[in-house]
Image (tube, rainbow, N blue to C red; front, side):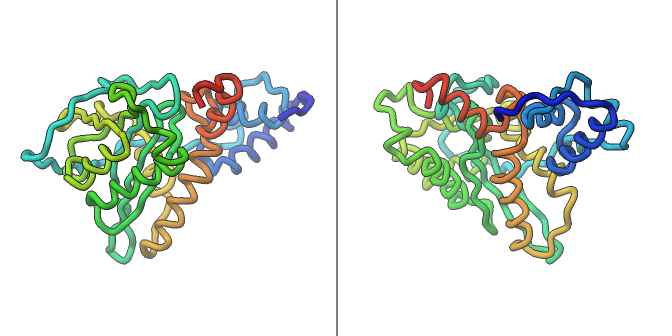
Length: 267
């Protein structure tokens, strides 16, 4: 951030680590907390683990979620264009998506459909609704396209160069409305095998983080409160603060900003 690095002692380290831990909502472990402090101008050479243990600070860990996949065996088949290679050399080369449910105390469930860019792990689309259907999937992909500047920005004339959108084989993603929309937007659909969560591991990892960092920590009175909490985590914390190993230890947005300055052709 342009600060002159400030040497830090054990007591000051504990104070700084505690403040960074709170700012990260208790979700950043030692490596991410130390990276946070360095971004703020602290000269930190010590592993943050001892400081966290001294203060009883334990970051929440990710756990696996249950999926919503319901296959339509009569629907069109799409090949797996990703083959578990969840890397991308530039933005808008490979997107991944999935859906999850969010329970509330009133008994009504809220559903979230997402679109992430594998280049930075940035969340481009997050549509929420009361039904896990094709309309929700369409809303999420439209949000993703809008976030990138519109169809004219992501469109590529060459079919083999068009952005890939990888999902499971759920009926929401094989529905006529969704497949038609993807064709109109110039998006190639890709799907993993039935029953293999590892074929869409990047999308699964996002929802596992959401479940463990938000859903397991809160009880939502109704869908309005659930939506507010989830959207805040998605667009305030995840995109702008949460450090990701696939983004060189930066948040998705900060990674894209940094890379756009060094690789303008990939922007």
